[in-house]
Length: 353
Image (cartoon, rainbow, N blue to C red; front, side):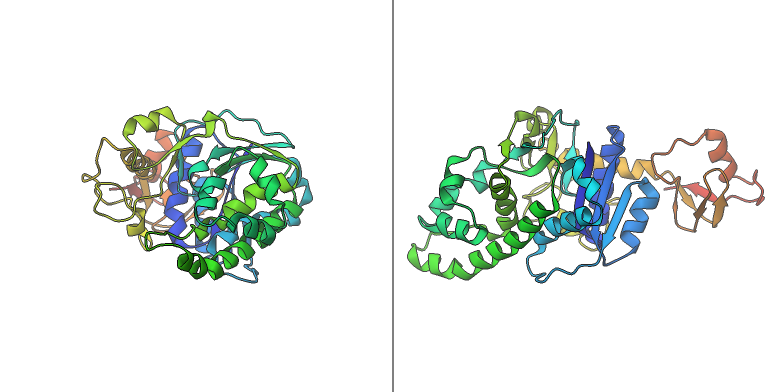
């Protein structure tokens, strides 16, 4: 099974992907695919060179870019459009802020896809609580019968294991996600007026998750939500981390909860920061440990550019050695490059601080 992640090529996602990829490779996952919309070309280049992962970059030709999550089905659509043989594969689809403790043991089929249980924020009851007629209107936008959605259970999302995904499916998810988001945004004030002051509007940002789930049913597939794909949050007790195989680093709203707050790292990386404040009783501490795993891999920093004849790769000042980061390198070779005992007659790299 191939592990696939979709996101814009911006620095914001680079360090998250480093954490995610480092853990995947530590668990023995080799087939990792990163899909990017073209923005900062240094991001995919860096990740490809450092980790040896498969990278695809596509021009962002979305007709509406205001709804950011639509980038994910858009990238799927472009990836499958480029090579239809990719529709023959099985994929584990996850976000960059996901960390695996173990590799889930799941096997999707062409007609049965597997997802994490997300009933608390995608369920019919949740939608009905926001407006008794809202589900019917949402289904009209997507072009599915509300009765079909009401009859189908379970409610899955977040992480998916899928087999034989098609261009047609992802094209519809892409278009529907934008249309559904625009609809929910346009009727928000209407539903606020209908309810009392305690009313909280529906979470419109999850439109892409409904579009993905409901279209699985539209294309006559089943959804299974086994315990194997249960996940925990940063705010959960640390015991929950060990009871699940997936950690989703989301839901921390500020930097004052004694938890790791990813919102602090939009323009910088967390690799050199101290996290002594993070509560060791919470699952969040396990993400801090995963951040440290990335730093531990970067043991050597290039201080003078050179061409490595052993793997025919160029290294430039400031690069980390080796590439990919999990490559096995003999101690003899490390000693040679970090001393004067090489053809250059001077150290070409040093141990990272």
